[in-house]
Amino acid sequence: MAATADQIGDERGLVTESVNEMMMSVWGGLTSSIKMFALEYRITDLTLNSFDRILAVANGQQQGDWAPISSDLDDRVLIRTDLGERLRLLSEAEWLPVASKEQRTIAELAEAAGIGASQIAGHLGITPGDARRLIRGQREPSADEMRVLSDLLGSVPEISLQFDDDLVVSLDLPEFRPRLHLAARGEHRGDEVSARRALAGRMEALAARHRDRGPLNWVSLIREALRED
Image (tube, rainbow, N blue to C red; front, side, top):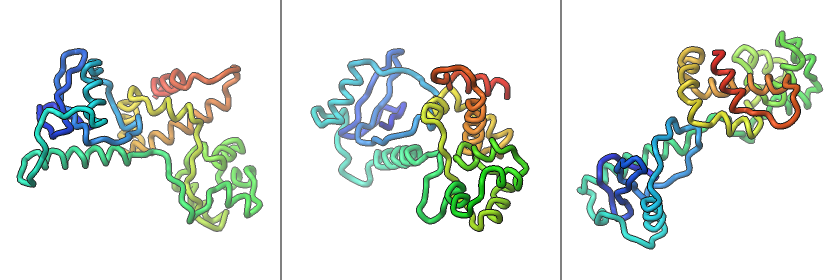
């Protein structure tokens, strides 16, 4: 839900309090699902009483703290519109490519052409293992690699990335966003999406060399990788 430091809202908004006595207005009518990676800092928690009140207002069991907006001349219209637009942008944020039906992936094009990982490795000047990761979507091809692949496979392949689910969840934690932002500015011309994809590809390659049994501690491995950067 959208929130503001100013104590203002509509009939579904209410003033709430956090456990460290911060006061904020929560607009219960402005809600959306947001990917965790779009967040940056965990600031505080609401008190249980405030959280219960928010749920009651959202479920229509209780009125908010302000009167309804009944006119377009009400200044709250501008505030609600601005908050709604910010929330929309956050909800649409994504760093993994969305598959389309118009193009085929590297794996699909390679299979159709009868081209294996060793041939792709030879044309790109990379190792067969790296070529297999490229085919499986465990790293993103560079612009130069895309040009070579397009000529080799006879069509421009769609970028399809398939990272480990637990890796994605771990990489999305807010604690990593500031460091990834710095990496984006220093190495990817400010493109945080490219920075995330590049780091995820490095982590997949690291996991392939990991010899310990049992599940990987992705959070610990990501911290180590970012410290080395």
